[in-house]
Length: 209
Image (tube, rainbow, N blue to C red; front, top):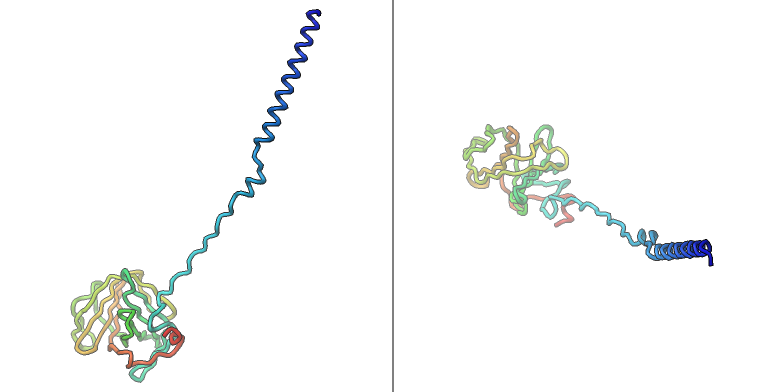
């Protein structure tokens, strides 16, 4: 066999080997290639997280917005409220607007069925309520003082800042007063502490009893 024939034969064999190797690599690639449709199907859709509904700060109390409370020959429609919190609920001051006045029915502590039947009073109090205040012509003693945050609900509640001081004052008998100081302003209400048998409640709060 001539040298030319041998060279041609070798070239053809090399070409055939190269083509066979390419076919094997192509076949292996087809086997190893991931199925994109399957991968996409395996991907789990992210779960949609819903924000929890805000808790009702008045839930479970003896009074609710919209109630009408009657006592001492008077009726008060609880249109708004100021909720005072320390770490837990400290007090709820329900507001019954009557013209420019803000009469209130307060729960202190909020879980009690005893209410504070109060009317607005003008007091001269610094940002830190003093140990003694003259209210309704009486020298009333401070019984508690709490740094709290405030939340206004409903309608008609007087404007307060996001935080301040809540002070409870007492005189002899059942005379009581609340003083709120916030952002350089002082609000005060005075009246009497009433037991559950001394007032009547009407309104949507009845369904929660």
